[in-house]
Structures are given as structure tokens and as C-alpha cells.
Image 1 (spheres, helix red, strand yellow):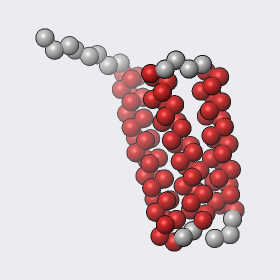
Image 2 (cartoon, helix red, strand yellow; image 1 turned 45 degrees about the vertical axis):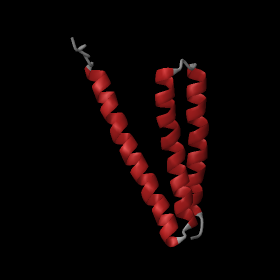
Image 3 (cartoon, one colour; image 1 turned 45 degrees about the horizontal axis):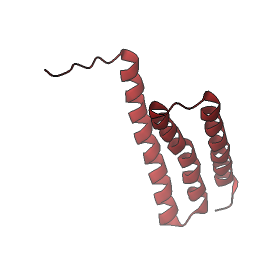
Length: 98
């Protein structure tokens, strides 16, 4: 007999949004990095790094917290530290001379 898996509405919505955000985030990072390589533009490199520092840790923490029990303190701390780095990188990218 094949086991039947019942998914809640919330898990379907969260899973769908996770996939959409992953695809969009990785597309933004890829396009920004391609812009850096094509034009040798340092601002585009820091823009790509900033977006990567937002997207990649969030994806990693989402997957890790499903497998390992981590305290809320460490989850929030990782998000905040990586967001500070990301925002500083993006700010540097939009204020530096090309």
C-alpha cells in the first residue's frame, strides 16, 4: 500500500513561497554577477554580494532548522549579522564610483 501524505495549506503556501523566493533570489544574484563580469563593474560585484548575503543564509537556515534543532537566539543572530553585511555591501555598491 502506498502511504498517503496529507499536506496542510500552510505548508503548501510556505513551500511554494520558498521555491519562488529561491528562484528569484538566485536569478538576481546571477544577473548582478554577470553584470560585474561583463562590465568589470565593482558596484555590481558588491550588489551581487549583498543580495547573496541576504538569500543564501536564509536558504541555508531554512533547510538547517528543518533538520537540526537550533535555538531562536542563534537563528535571529545569524539573520541579523548577515543582513548587516548585506546592507553594508549594497550601500557601498550604490554609493561607490563605477
